[in-house]
Image (cartoon, helix red, strand yellow):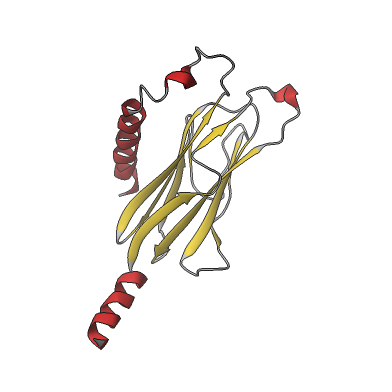
Length: 159
């Protein structure tokens, strides 16, 4: 019994990363800098033991590491911040200045035990019933294919 408990504790301590979005998986945004809206902040919770040694944001235009900014200043990747409730979890944020490109924003984390990614999609809100968002359910297989391809391609960069 003690051996099983020790094995379970060891399994919890040494694990690959898990990533969960903190502000939903789809964020509707108005692509208009004159709208007076504040910058967007995308956030993920990454739990990993040991701490991830490779973390990257893949945006529609740039790839950034925590603490980096895009050359135009439109994207700012925050540093990894340990969460107060769990010493193996971290919060990572990406500030996206308006106007922002729509598309997928992917956070990829890797440690010695595995690789994980989390995705947030920025899109314009639907303005009519014939917009692309009304057909999203019919095309559900297409984004999944893109996500798998981007995660596989990005995992090569993290090796």
